[in-house]
Length: 160
Image 1 (tube, rainbow, N blue to C red):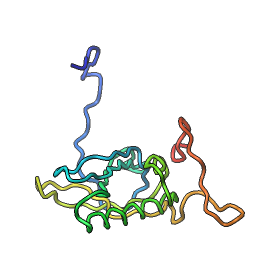
Image 2 (cartoon, rainbow, N blue to C red; image 1 turned 90 degrees about the vertical axis):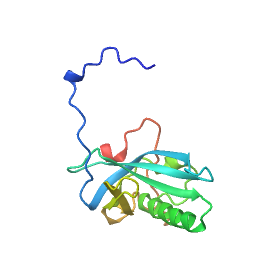
Image 3 (cartoon, helix red, strand yellow; image 1 turned 30 degrees about the vertical axis):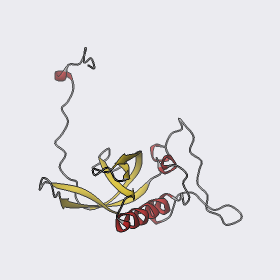
Image 4 (cartoon, rainbow, N blue to C red; image 1 turned 45 degrees about the vertical axis):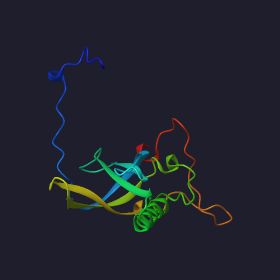
């Protein structure tokens, strides 16, 4: 059992109640990615964690689940289209690993929807575009799009 020795709740502000954020477009980065099995166990999805990096909701987290391995061809088609939009927004067109998508600012369009299981209102990511209308990086002399290389332990561009 994990030890909580030394923790004193009276010394720490309690977490706020996370109501959905207002619909709109926010600058965010992908901070985590993980492949998880589907509820039915017949496939898997890529779960991406987005963190808003500026404004009133800085630090808030949102999630996208991309059904890249699913019995439903429609679900896979939708997931691949969504992944394509994310890749284009961060200017990583042929990622070999989801880690290549991390810590690159992009604009996410956020909506609000009612959950089917609980009836609660929740946020839903509706779209992805490059931050500021252009993908990160520049162009090399041969016209090929480039972006700064991410290195382990380096400061993410949105924190500079």
